[in-house]
Image (cartoon, rainbow, N blue to C red; front, side, top):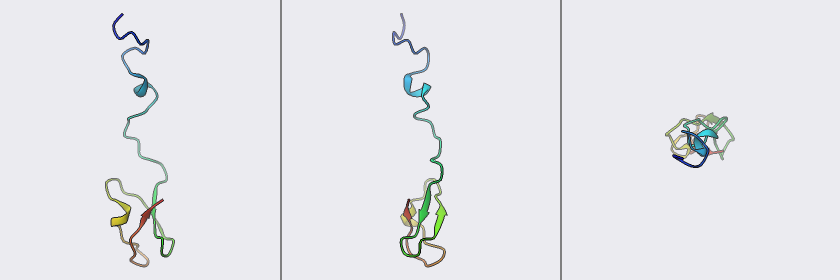
Length: 61
């Protein structure tokens, strides 16, 4: 039997939805100084984003 794992053409990780490029829901950057929250932008580290209210570096929730 080709494959022999009984999973068919897709491996177990693909069948369960792992390894996709689904964005994490509700991920924000927050300001530890004033508490302001902004949506996280993919590919942009939160600590490189300045708070729009007070100008401090943001952190990831």
